[in-house]
Length: 286
Length: 241
Figure (tube, rainbow over the protein chains, first blue to last red):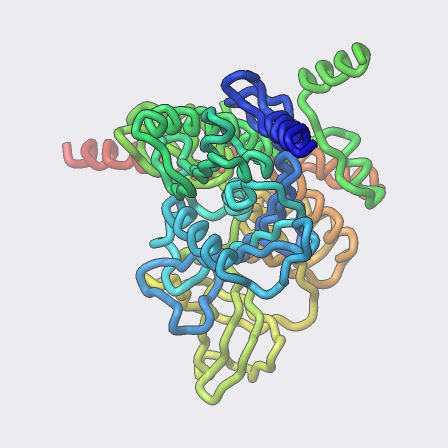
């Protein structure tokens, strides 16, 4: 009896652990270099100078930017440049077990790392004695929340009109179940051989601004992983670009928007004629 | 052609004179901010769409008194540093919350602005707009400002720091129009649509003759100045000959 039971348990264990080399597909059906569905909306919080909302798979993140404003307390001021202060927080309901709202070691570390990444892209020397505050709040999370926050924060900074060299696009890359993968989710992050590398770049120059590693990789794996991350970040950059340009479409002021303004209604979004036609055609197809 | 650029996006690959909000890497010109760039002409510049007020010399600003001390007044001009006006400069005494208008005399390396010719503003109300969009409220050679004055019969002062002060006349209508211009600041034919706005409200605004050429107003006024400056040296050389 005992023997039979043991073999059954072994079978069960074998069934539960996936092997990506055999399957050629991930647990959630993605390809190895495929990102989770990503969408960004800019200018969502009217009280902030700049803001962004990001949904990336199950991750949901708000980013708000205030400043440049006077840095307080005064001893934090730098007469040569602006100080970038990032505050990363997770909502108590963002993880399966309630998160203590008090900022813990992890929150402080991520705040510091994100601040240093964003400092690379901001022309901070233009604003002496000031601070640029970035607040990122994780509403829902499923692995890769720090890269989601960095991606959202850089969009919020651009929305606030702060001079920057470039945006920052970031993603998680790493290894799970025997294969190199992009944008790990929680299952893959908990895999027995998991290696998680948060990877953030300036997409135009290709400079790396965020790089951490949890686990071990061989030199060969590392050489394959970096191009994977670069390619994924370029895809993310495209989404960021679209989100920022979506708000401002160059066109003439339409009669409809004048009418709406006269009647004190919400502003009407003017679309160029071509796009409007395409949108109509799409609707008809559906 | 005008196009929207985001930070780090290529504005021009050619050698050009550098305008505002651009930087150069390896001989190529990139944008610093989210804004509108134009690749024609010999100047590469980006007009920002969002952002705070950064004081510059000769700007007309509207300030609010935030603190009164023995020596003078601290003035909030919507920048990240308060300005200071000594008591001796003002004819009237100011209280906290009073409005003043003035011109920026000088900006130092810490972006602190020195305000010249400060005057207390009596009565009126203030409409706040995005500071980078105030050029469109003024228009080329003040065409939009004239239109606003004609349409609402208000006394208007537009501060470059994103504050519009108005007194007398139909200030409620002015608020509506200013919000409309603020929301549509990046679009073309704004002046004619504001005319349409006034018409829809039943106000007849006769168009001054000089306004027509500026219907498709460009954002940069500095281009006009640059043409003049190119012409000037030639004239000088002619004179010498």
